[in-house]
Length: 87
Image (cartoon, rainbow, N blue to C red; front, top):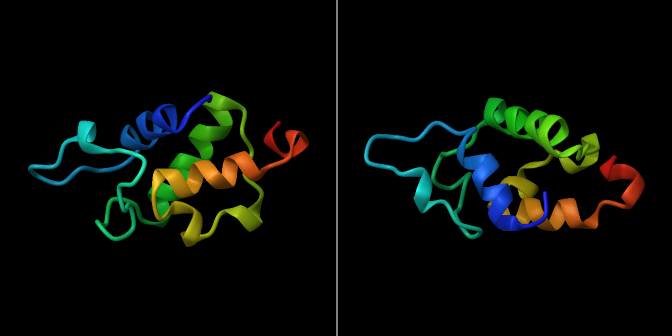
């Protein structure tokens, strides 16, 4: 995972889109929680996908609502992980 755009793609494939919503509209600033696009199950699916597809392990302390406000917020949390935490 090399960019917030790649993260947007991963997130977009793990959330349930409502009628009239389009995964292509997801960008770094999309308010995931505010729009109701993620819930606790979706967050865990995203965390699992990050681990399986990108080798990124989020510590329990990083799995908080603030880090899932938007793809940009999650990307910042990922970038803040030390090299050891990411593997």
